[in-house]
Length: 302
Image (tube, rainbow, N blue to C red):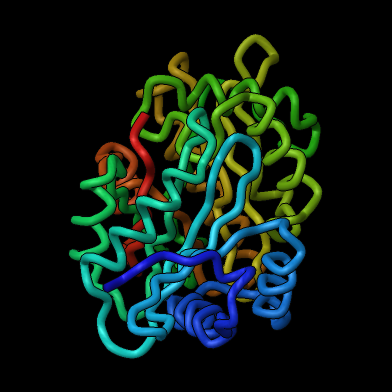
């Protein structure tokens, strides 16, 4: 019979499971610290994060590791040899929900070695999660210089001329009422911290020529933030307020960003977009972006 145990106080070795997950992240194309496995195991051992395991007949079959931060829970699931079964997966995710503070939003990674995506979605959704998908889209920059010039009837300024408080107000208002509202942050303060981190270079150095604000009454009402991630440029954030939507501002910001990154000889521009954000996907496709991969994750419904 399958049961769930707390692996932090058990005799089971979770390292192979954590290593399996880190390998899946790298195979997906995401960068991960060389010390990530040791850091994760150390964090669990110190009680900063947690790990539970599904055990059957004395053998550890799979683990769910999770942590809490900023009113959110974040978890990943890894199964061992062989394919996960519904019972074990259900027990792990239910225990994650039961151990989480009631007011917290919960998230489960979309990467789970040896677990079919269909099974993960079915089990997580039975416990109140919703499956969300986001597309990574990429645009080659070899011909960016040939893009037609875009013009708008508004003043512009580099985002580096503004602090995170001003940009967070714009970002928060722009996403209010959209499909991505509160996708990653529940409060404007959390959003402000993200933008401070972005401006500090935690997402890669900001490419100032590619990152700009569009002003209305001398106040930013649209912006794009582009960072240098090596051979590629990454659109870390793009937001257009309701006051400027439908006026060609998004296309203008993207065109300028593509041209600026092209001048730096970057290979491509990449971004992420929710699969149900049809207007944004249509705009990106019209400018040469194509879907390069799909990211899946699971959010606990409110």
